[in-house]
Image (cartoon, rainbow, N blue to C red; front, side, top):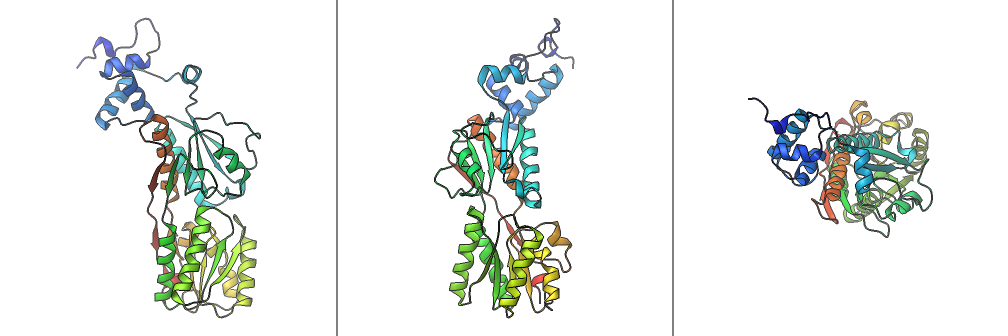
Length: 340
């Protein structure tokens, strides 16, 4: 079938506009714009018609003109503390955000605690994604007060409400993990907990305390600094083993910590999966490749990043109201480290 004159590039050589795409696709300019940016509630067949029409016409969005006309930058910002950039969870989260933003035609700029916005300055972006924001982080407080739409991955425990939230039920997953250890024979489990005031950290510590009280077992807990390195976590566990030689299970919250402490456990004469059960609150490649493989909670960080970006895009387009909260399921992966 030959394309109609409405589908042909302009004879004058003038680049096609969004109005040209809308006219050729027989939709409104708003629908065409939403379809091209991946925003709004556009039916998938309509979206595909618009995308194919834009391709045939050779339409390219004029970002500079759009920015000047509407003060929209087509850019969102992602923030997390700089010392977490080596953690596998956060890198997977970043990929999820970037991939979803790209599908919506948006750029992503990274903000870190090492290069924060100037005090009082508002980032030149359309909205923000904050990954498990800690209440004591001054950059988080500044961004939460910027007036920009903010979607947080996990709830914010500070004094401001984000525009949207994607969160997971970490209390239930922690209880499930501790129940599994109990059912596997553990009677004196210890917990190396994160020390920060993020929602994830606070929830894990409170769930552990309630589980210990409800099961009549001693609360054996040590804290590791948020973002603690390998040596710091090993030192915490070394001191724990010396003070509590009778522990028969160990749960490590920090990303990668459970695999990092294996040498300390062996040096103390403990055999993982036999006289000591070992588990992690964050699954990653180090848990899967450890010997023995380590039981861990899969937080699906890539999906968490993608869903956070998706929700922000929907709020920016007006397709989803501010205040929306969505839940992302997590799952416990049981491996040889907790099977006696």
